[in-house]
Length: 240
Ligand SMILES: [Zn+2]
Ligand SMILES: [Zn+2]
Image (tube, rainbow, N blue to C red):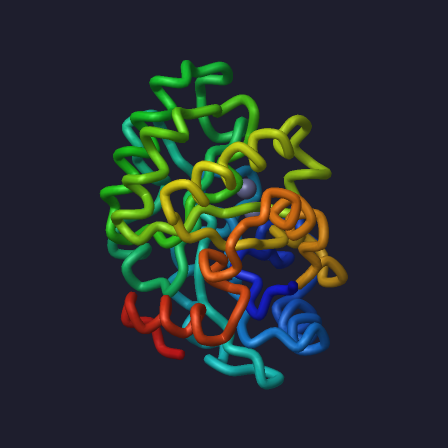
């Protein structure tokens, strides 16, 4: 099984990623993807672009090299009330919003499970958020049984992030637990690369292997077929 859309990727605009928009989209075309989401980091990540960058993303064609290009952001969770580091008006102007916790932008380094649970429960109520990004990060463990059913009810996609298995030590075990809880509650997931270089676009082999191991139902992987992905875009009034 492979993906037909990679909805969490970074370009040189994040300044710690190394491929241009053209190179990323071309790589998506080479992987025969239907869509790619450009999700450079929100303002508070060191070196991240500013408001004017996100407000100018509309200048990139909607379809490039035959690939639907979703204009988005990976917003940083700014606190344990679930605030994001971007203005609501900017988030609303974007097509795809991933919300993620990062050690470099969250002040508290070892929060309790209860604090992280509250943050995600509040983000579950944020209508601007599409994806809960790499939530298997060990430092920010939350109560999966409490949060995941609410995320599912509110149409949020829980990400299984292929890049995390290399960059976030210990996240694989958490991702297996998260996927099991998603399966139990019928919560939809999205499998992404979090690519910081074009050669990684569309490669989710490790994530697919753990999902196969637990017999995860394909119908819950929103970017595993054109029908389910376009269905999600339509539900959220995003152009297909
Ligand atoms: Zn991230
Ligand atoms: Zn990322």
